[in-house]
Amino acid sequence: MQKNTQNSSISKKAFWTGRICSTLAVLFLLFDSAGKFMRPAQVIEASARLGFPMSLSVTIGTLLLACTVIYAIPRTSFLGAILLTGYLGGAVAIQMRVGSSLFETLFPVMFAVLIWAGIFLRDDRLGSLAGAQI
Image (tube, rainbow, N blue to C red; front, side):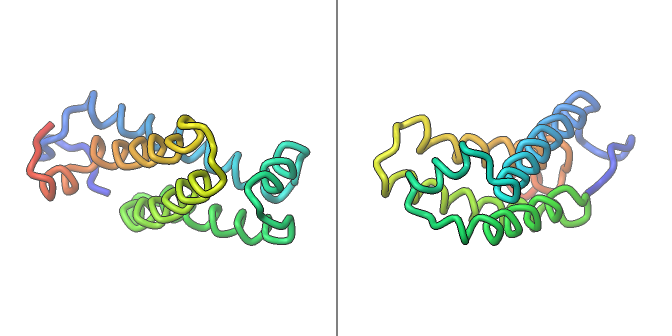
């Protein structure tokens, strides 16, 4: 990740907004991952509703944790965002398969937007790829 210096085209406000978006995303994903390891009643119920055996809970939690850590490390955040996009895309497919509500189906999409917004706002390399200036 490129630091917000005077040579950067990112404003200080955009940079910190991006950091806040990324921090919120990481905290939520760590919480979600921890739930898959601890298996509270809500996770057990959701897994059953989505058709996942509880034996996959730790594997899914490990994958989510790995992708989140990769996203949280500034030098690898772009790769982490790509991996998390794939993870969240799978979540959308699963929600659609079981006929979940529109909010439950679109929540992973909204979350992916938050993840990418965090990078877009704090790293001008993504903005230059997209042809945008902030």
